[in-house]
Image 1 (tube, one colour):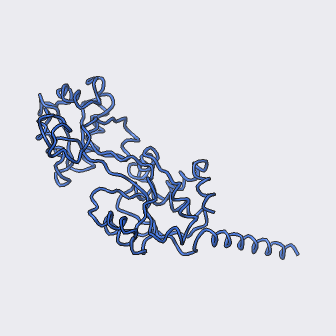
Image 2 (cartoon, rainbow, N blue to C red):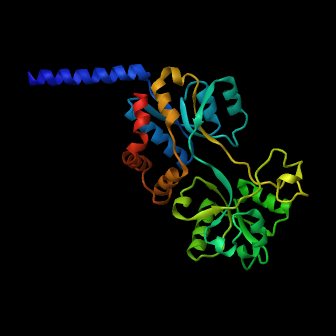
Length: 316
């Protein structure tokens, strides 16, 4: 009799789960895109683990930052929780315009690309983060081989020459020096930081380095669509094309049929929010401490139920 009751209970539980899933979406796997970098993998696996908690089946699929859009538009891929809208050509905006890809909303990450410096440099250049102050105290960022100009570490040459071009166009008192690689740039910055030496570097966020070192950003003149023809927008009111760098937007996107096939999952994705501090900290564990990514994400999910429990509940 006890066995019969146990079996009946298990059957009822299974039916309840099946009924809940039927009400909130198909049992077909939701195919989540994985791009080429750690931060996106973290966002994808957080999303996937939360969807699994809500009862959905998940499959992760590797896809390039540009090819992914064709896959999503055609319904072969279903969900990309962290899409960057820079350097993706016109296939993405065209797919959004046609309705084949649906924007769900921002993820919560605030991307930044520009010139950063250790926070202790504010003592040597009190006007920071103003770009005007940076020019006034360029010598505070100088090295023996660049004096009296400040030393600016730029991206490796094969990443482009935006910083070098900006220095030359705006006639800034800095000597741009190309970094050898991401690893070499980080090693140089960490050495300077440990010795409290001057450092100014082109870099980006999110990145695990921001979870380890206290860095600030120069307030460069904002990018402007008419910067190449209207001189009032940049460093020098008499010079054109001397604005700062355009910043990306990061959002969540889905296949156009996603909401109809998995309505509960769409509710969760709409609520999903990941900020820079979270991703920086998790990337530190994976990229710097060389820990397993899925293990790191699982730990974060377990420790942050108060944050995501309502998202999952809404999906069930």
